[in-house]
Length: 79
Image (cartoon, rainbow, N blue to C red; front, side, top):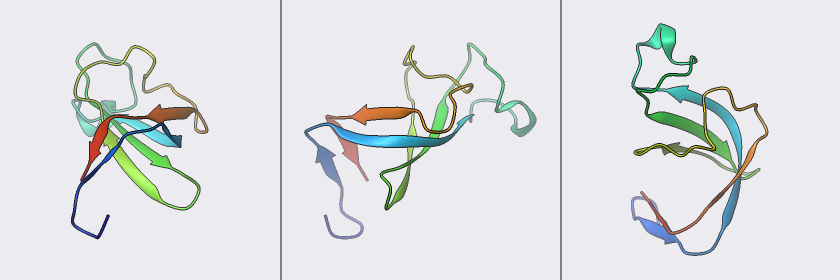
């Protein structure tokens, strides 16, 4: 999609986690697990870096995920 336009991943797009932070917490607590959370994931496909926000809890994700964890993203709108 041209720059500035949104699109939807229909099929599975695989990304590698670079970092995870809980942006619902103060900066000094963003890397500690908490029940009150909104995770920000920095991810790469090997060529590009992108960011994802967890709006509702996904049990398989946590701030303790190691760099290199792979995720499949599908049926999401990308802005």
